[in-house]
Length: 202
Image 1 (cartoon, rainbow, N blue to C red):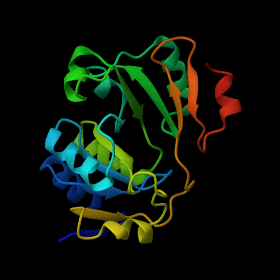
Image 2: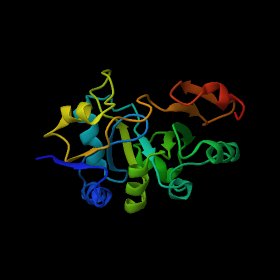
Image 3: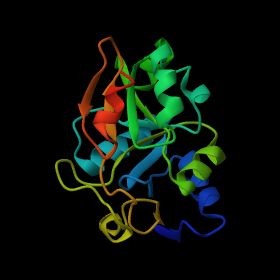
């Protein structure tokens, strides 16, 4: 049974946070596309995403966080990245950082991890409520189109524990991704954030 709730409901972020904290799978709106969201420290919850999407286990999930401080235990953040985050976070930019030893334990030994602070009112309230990062990835079956509206997300009704109705995503396109594991830094996915603007900072 999937709980369906409007992002405008004053308790939506609290109900979603409770489900995520208890190991559930949420579908949430962001400004880019709808995302699956689970507790970043719950391995079983992460496995649900991979199973539902038919996703290759070698493909990482993205960490969404309420602030940079909450992920410093998981990733090493270069000084240059701090300049970029001041300019573009919250926003449609995912930065890939090298993982710490603790981070490697959370992500199955991976040496890197993508991080983003979204620019979506509901998601920011949710992340502040949970107080810890969540793992996310686009709502879709792997290699299919990402969900850009609540109607698209309803394809997973009966599969997710909660679906939050945020209407149509503002940009309806995935985030831009920069690999900052080592210099020179590289834009590895062009998304809704202007790449030419980013080049000034990397």
